[in-house]
Structure formats: structure tokens, C-alpha cells
Image (cartoon, rainbow, N blue to C red; front, side):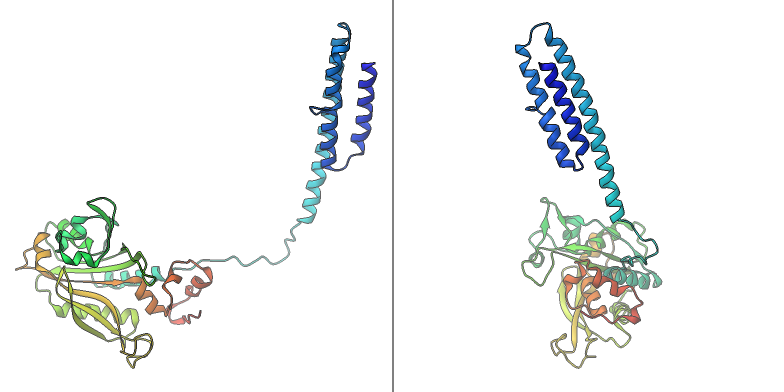
Length: 352
């Protein structure tokens, strides 16, 4: 009885399998016959009613039928998979004679363009390009720049302290002390230091991370005239030969005397506009003569040596140079914005 039922299940299954063309229908049929509650499984459950002599024969027959049907299901499944693949390939056929899409190509970032232009200029003037750690110590970031603990000028820079002694540098001036201390022979120093700096900011117009370039010169008989002449060459190169400079007395702990440097507004030519707030001038950088205390703390005799230092924000300089109205554009990496810089400087016509 069981043998005849098994043969019937097998023959009917073969007929149904051969008629199936869809993957889901095949899965459903397989579950109906070979699943946990399938027809063959139910046959095995009925072996308890068979005689001891019939049980091994029926069990062997069920296994034989199962193996045969498994093979048949796999054969049909492979045929269905092949059909699906062929249909997909026919739909996805690529016509190699069609013109390809133009690939999106990158371009040099305006900040990198400004940094490279500054480096080329100062290297041509005999300067070295140096770098320093962004994770700085309190000693180099403050103490060796004439800002001892408790100095009120420390409050001017809200800093990111990592530990009690380590912080993210608030200015590239931190490299000044490292350069002077490393110069054991006390030979003349002419360096620029481009790099990232960090300060805590709590308003919408400033970023916690920005880029600076620091300049430092130390030698005998360095005067304010050297500083003024250097900055004039620097600004005229970056912003145009008609650029004028204005020095205003200011205060920085590591320079004495100290100056804020304004440049004539490149948009209105000094006549007054919304960019310069009708003054004709734009504040751009800080500068001054290296403080005698800084020279002394870093191994230089202030009676013999003198020097000057300056620092300018590269983000701000790039915005002025390329007429970028929103600093956030420098950090979004929007290809539509960056591709405008894939041309020579004199060809720029930035539009937003």
C-alpha cells in the first residue's frame, strides 16, 4: 500500500515539475512534496503502522524517491536561473557604439592652490617650508611664545585641550619655538608654516578648524622695514599689484611691536563698498617684530638677534583671491563649485 502511494507521489511530482516555468512555483511544489510537512515526510510518519519486514524497504524507497526528486528540482532550478540570466543580459545589453558619459573629473581645491602659490613665492625668496604637529603641547603653543600660565591673553583663544598638557594647536605660531630651538647653530631663519589650527567657536560665522600660514624671520639687524617690504610683496602677489597695505598698532604676546595689517579693498579699489563696510580697507593678517622674551626663551640673544613674524588665515585669503562669498563652500567638496577652479587664475569668473 505504502509502496504504491510513494510511486504515485513520485510520478505526479515529475509531471508537475516538468510543467513549471516560474521559480516561486517550483519552490512551492518542493515544499509540498519534500518539506517538513510534505507528502513524503507524511509517508515516513506512517511507517509505524508497517510490519518490521516492510519498514526498511519502504524507508529505502522513500530515500531513493527523495534523492531523485531533489536532483530533478535542481535541474529545473538551474534551467530557470539560466533563463532569468539570459533575459537580464538581453535587457542590459550595452551598445558599445554609443558615446560614453563624460567622466566627472576633479580639480585642485582653491585652498591648495593658495598654499602652493604662497609656498612658491616664499621659496623663491629663500624661505623654507616647514611643518609641526597639530597635537601640540602647552609649552610650545603658549609658554615659549610668551604666554605663561595665567596670562590674560590665553583667554583670547578658547582651546581644545586633550590632556592637561596637550591640546590642538590654536595657531601655527607654535612652530616658531620648535624651529628656533632646533636651530642649534643659530643660523638665519626664514620659514613659512602652512597648516591647520583649531579653536572652540560658539557662533555661526566661525569654524572650529581653519588654515593658517605663519612666517618667521630671525637674523641680525632685522627691522620693521623688512617686515613691511615682505608683506607688500606677499599681498601684491596674492591680491594684485594695486593692493595697498595699512599697518595698525595691535597686541600679540609673541611680538613687540605688533600690527594688524589691512589691505585695500580689491572689490571697490578702496572707494568703499559692502565688502569693506564702506571703509576701503579689509583686515587680513597679524604681524610684528618677534618679542625679545620669545627670542631669549628659545636660545637667541635679543641683543644680537631680531626678527619678524606674521600670520594670515588661508581660508579668508582664498575667499578674497577667488571672490568666494561663503566659507562653507571651501569644505563641502561640491564638484559643481570645485570644477570652476580647473582653469588658469586669470580665467576665473566665479558665479554662484
